[in-house]
Length: 503
Image (tube, rainbow, N blue to C red; front, side, top):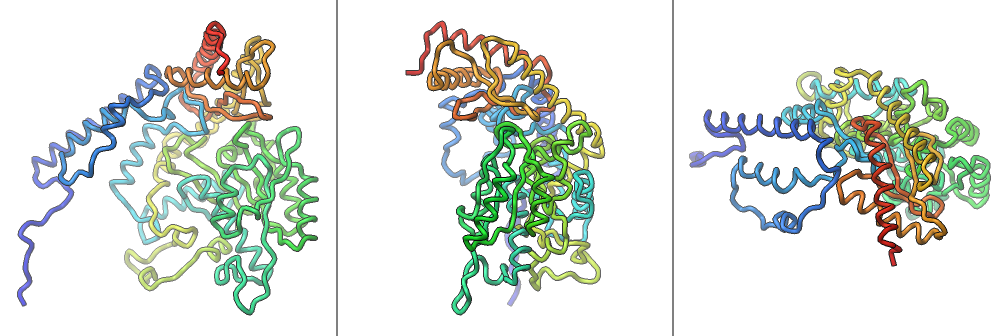
């Protein structure tokens, strides 16, 4: 039979030289617009609400036919660009979200243009990612560790916990990959596996326990001490009690930089305890691990270099755009054993594009992965680790400056210590109980945010509502913290003049 040819063959590329030139001009405009936005950020609101009419336009029907790139970009500039959550702004201090950088933005464009598949294969992007993994393994005290870039801290830490589960189960004679965390007919039910972390541990621990089939009962929260770090004596008692009850402890999670106040567990003591009890030691260093780069800030993190695995995010204190987290596993063989899987279509040949130097798909759950490491590689080559370290130290100094201003002001009260870069405080009402303080400060924070002055987040410290400043902002300056303090005091006085009670 004759082979028929489609009457019209299409592509998503511009179809003529003239169309390419039009798209080139639009692309230059996109770059210029974004750079102008970044350059003028200090003069823009820290956050603005989405107007109802704009919100309605973002609920349009499925576009069956296109409107063209120029018009689509116009919709972006009108409906999306003016209304981000503001984490790129110099006065964004909420939730430990990084700001990104101009070079990293362009690096993401390069990565998307190249569009490599980072499962493996014989190409330069794989080598670049391995180089960046090796750099951070060395910088964070785990030279020679295996690693992989993933979406965020939850996934990085969950991968570390998954390797821990595999390693300890294997040591106990269990085939976790074949049997999972359950007993099959004819098998003796295995003891439930449990792991430990402080009550201040991030919420990923419960998600991970559920996702790994352990159930969130498997996470055993340990009380904290007066410094908000894990109570090591309580940990040891809990391990002994669980073993006596027929459970199988397998991992302890130490936190480097807690979410609420930036406290760090006694990682060295946890490492020693894990070694004596035969447990895996994982460190959740989502943002705090990067303080290890600094000679000035490293001491509280002593012991992190003894970890069996470590998760950290470069889109937090590393200034990278999302998504850019990394999991490091000290033992490369255990890392591969926990995840490696073969398929005929993925086997390597002796030469050619499939002759992969390594397989990142054997280091985690994903087969398809984008080129997250390029922005890190380019940024470190352009600016160097020393500059990143100086900015981390700068953020801590700024947090201490803010704490000092709060402590010196009679209308403000600091609610927690500042071990690193997080400051929690509130406006003080004379002769008011905590409930009244909570209502007052909630309204104060909302007005601060809605007016676009600054964007702290909030939390609760010992049950009290706190305005929370988490400073990982490379664009913040001392004047921004002065503006924040002045605005909080001004809005507090405004609310008092209104006799606001939140009732």
